[in-house]
Image 1 (tube, helix red, strand yellow):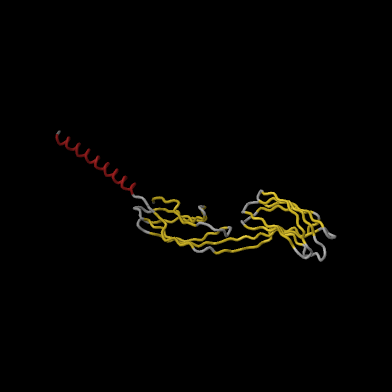
Image 2 (tube, helix red, strand yellow):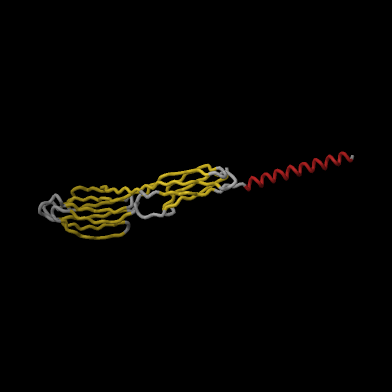
Length: 221
């Protein structure tokens, strides 16, 4: 009888000890976490690429014309009235146009052998539309086109991902301009290790920007 009691107590103690060991292991594993940070960031000077392109061309327009264009890139856009084909006659142009929601009416005279232009600023996605009439000379005509003066820039960068935590981490880092994400990549960074990374990003304009490289997600693996 005593032997049976002792046996039961020993078995009970063993089960409790095993359960405690399981909980200890579980709590210990849960306490292991990655801690990945961006170190040694290097962001190169942007390489700028200016570009002039004709985005609308109506050719020779007699009496009246219209246009409707949605900007693909930020930039300056010139509405050009060209009377270079005329030897003697000036042309008179009356135009009403909407540039990104701002309605404007204007009139101009284009001397023979010359051109005149109206310049507006647009951001990508903004619309430029309007209509105009022409008079003067035998043809009451003028050449019309819209030329976009845009600029893009490319930025190269490099950095290290350093994990000072106690577990490996699947880590996503991002390159940002003005707080907006332009590039991201995922790396596995072992505990106590660091991983080099690099990339390039492109911006659709050449304005001043604030750049940064940040960890946006990390998960224990």
